[in-house]
Image 1 (cartoon, rainbow, N blue to C red):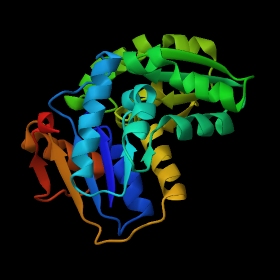
Image 2 (cartoon, helix red, strand yellow):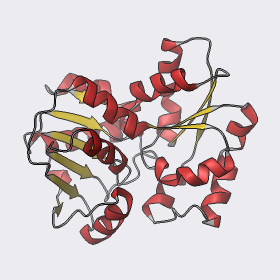
Image 3 (cartoon, rainbow, N blue to C red):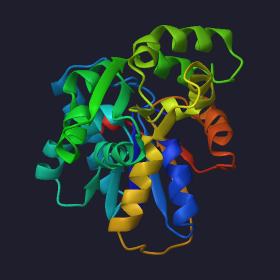
Image 4 (cartoon, one colour):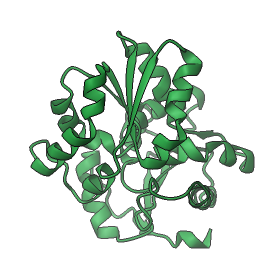
Length: 260
């Protein structure tokens, strides 16, 4: 059984990819919708939240955990790997590797939450792989609330203007590849592509799911997915079915994450 967590709904992009590759795998997903976003929090708070998220998933007896959250992957994964005896995968390593493979001109853009960009995790990982690649990083703090509040249509004027504002430095840099350093961002990828036509967009959640598939032998199961949230079930369920393009049924439950 695989556990997946994110600060909200963005991690559903990873779930979608896992289901494609491992259709019989049982999955437990936790979206911390009551405390989203993580990207504006201090590093200590991010670590605290992440430890609670992992403890909750371990209470469901998962065998491996995918951190489908750029902020946690960038700021807390080393702490989590030290504290918990379970394979833990993040989104940084896989996305950085893919960016190095895709770029033709050696310029890679990185967007993420304030905490992710401040950590410099993606840029440092890229430099480890290829020190000749230039990186340009820009925080996009409004992207998560736009996604969480349903401003996701590719013709949405508010989202387009926000993208144009945030992505101007990336566009000016000439980057031919862009890491969507938060798993919420692929949901507005069509809008981002309109602002940055021809640029390779890297879905960090999907790439992390591919890495998970490569490293963890499928354990098999009944293909059951259980969804847990820390806030309203109804709003999550409606959005989840839109993003996943499949029903979630009655498998959405609320949990008091502060108990963990």
